[in-house]
Length: 81
Image (cartoon, rainbow, N blue to C red; front, side):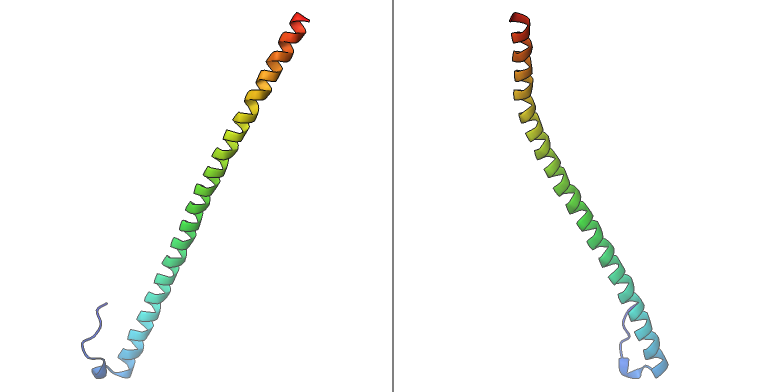
């Protein structure tokens, strides 16, 4: 809806109609902004969780290698000794 050229020439009923349509538009835009904020928060949460999971995986693989080496040594010692 384009703004009227002369607000002074509008009747009271026309001004009320214009204000009502503007309030409807504002409500629609506020809903869109809220939805976008939720989506941004969700995407940020996914990114953060992904980074945490990758760092956990790296820690687990670092911890796993010495454990495998210890298990291999223990098994070899059992066979030899």
